[in-house]
Length: 313
Image (cartoon, rainbow, N blue to C red; front, side, top):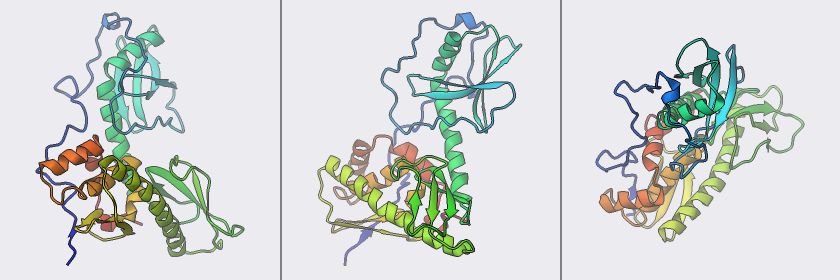
């Protein structure tokens, strides 16, 4: 009998690299030097070797808070976007809000000096923005709306739905493998279609995208691992994101297509690693890390979600 090996994606026994760097300061807030002139001068903004891992989207809020302007800067930890508010305070302050990073600075602080502060606190900033982004993605998955002008998550982006009786086939306004929030999926359905009908048609489109996208990622990781994949399929089991049988057949849950690409890559790399090691021993986890070094961050993002509950209506 062929055995499927789920072997938890969240096995607590393996040793993982920290998903994010530790912040400076015991209170977990950035300690910006009081006299700004004490910040080291001459720290350029040309990124050296950016940290590996998923990049945080530079999403400008639809409406900036009063008195704010939007700034984007390069750092050695990756690009950072933030809201800048000038004030009468004597120091530069950093805060993470629901809209992202808010930097409050005296009017006399130059753009170069701001860049030095942002660069100095880049690890803290990127860690906090990543945590905010993941919380927002979890909320987005739970709040999928299967109706005209509703929305749903696709590869981590929020996609809008449109019912179009004039169409003969579904039409996606963006790039299928690299969607951005605001892209529109138009479905060839009557204007009075029920939510269930819209959901059914959207599921069919999502499953088609999942087959194509997962197939490409499987090919990528199999080549990296130097293994041959005999067969694979998509399914929607209630209790697992993926599995690998002893005869080298992989199953992937199509609902992974809701998540950002780095989460998909973790699950795919995990199952491909089982083609070499049908266990969760040290050699297996070394292979996962070799295939996908940033797997710990992706695993943490997926951990709160159960396959049988995505997406909720």
